[in-house]
Figure 1 (cartoon, rainbow over the protein chains, first blue to last red):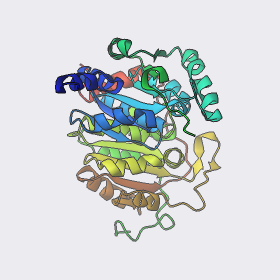
Figure 2: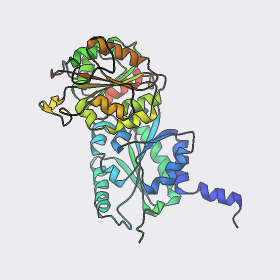
Figure 3: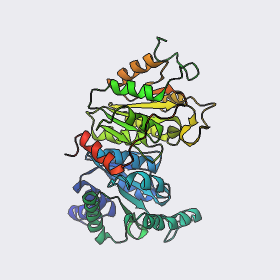
Figure 4: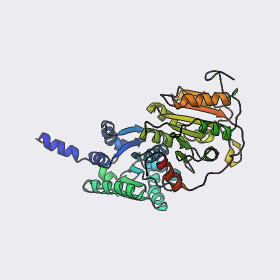
Length: 182
Length: 203
């Protein structure tokens, strides 16, 4: 039987615990989101931690507007969303975040690949990286637990230092994704 | 018209002028308030009313003046934040009214300039123009302190109340279809840098 210490260590090593810790270490206090089932443990953990101000918004671009305002007001923020939510963002990225040089941190739960059951999600997913590349917007796809903290921590620091947004795509290889239940 | 709130509806509010109302708003400020101007004529007239370093001018991202202002208000709870938005812009992001009502920041005032048209694109009527009362929408979203300004005097009274309110408020003003009186200098990085200096985040 695992000891209490081992259980604590395994909880600390989950992808959501690592993301939460990395946001905290980097002073990312504001977290807004439009939910996704895969993101549920992260959203729960952030809500339960008094360090964060965390709330849902009606749309992803609204969330981006809020973290942009908060950044200008002196508080760093992140937006959590799923792939289809990212697909609603090109206008706000191209007309607010990029031209005004705002280091918005975006975490995208990747739907539409590696076992997707919804054709619409699969097609939306294919638009994500071409959009990011067309805007020359920094993005990383995180597939491995042992690389998560390094990529997330360095990317947040780079975003702030260079005043540029970053998108961290959380692959089903990392999170387990969402699977079709028969 | 003397009575403020309650009896004034979209249909009986006086049609006023955006540049005039914006100047009246700015004249009520003590200097520290952050003001977020929405896309188009709303921020052009804010620019024309005097270029305060605490002003932020939105050049794109239609509909995000209220969300940006909410972010500033959350980041700086001791600073009063005011957002100016057009009716067409607000229609693009009505959900933000629910978000603001749910969070209920004590330092956020919302202002809607409503002429019922997409003025900057040629004056086409908005889908809301014929049948939607934006103050009623805001109230139904949970922003109880929402009102039409009956006339200029009432507008000033509502602005004063908003500046000392302890819950988010929304003021809607019916405005004419006059174009903006100036155009904001379109330099996004300069706008952000000046704003961040103006609200004490950057040196």
